[in-house]
Image 1: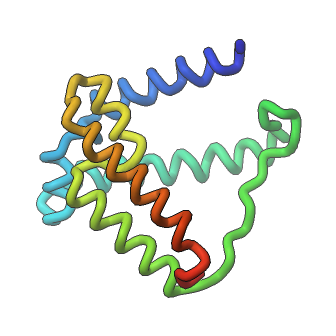
Image 2 (image 1 turned 60 degrees about the horizontal axis):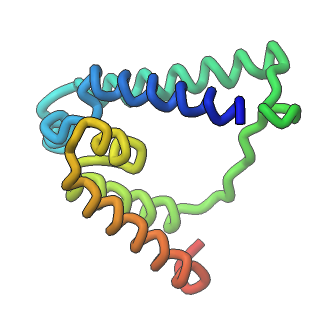
Length: 138
């Protein structure tokens, strides 16, 4: 139970950071897709650099997961079609809804309850993917 409280607190902190940085703002996402502002690219670039630095730090300091195993990032299978197709579908969904999966839940916390429609649609899309997974290129 204690570790779930830690995750909950980290999630609340992450949500506050995304709201204060305007990363959950539909207008900022709209600017990004029209290449009118560097704001979202700066946030995404900062997240990528922070992730790289923290992974490097975890390797040098031998930081372990909450289960006690070594922190490792599994290798991804190489491929072109799957990443282009998956990235295009994800990007279209992001552009249409104005939010990627994490910020969708944060938007509920800000009182934007209309995002529930998007969450239900995303869950249905995930369910449809599960049904069609074996027939799609991987």
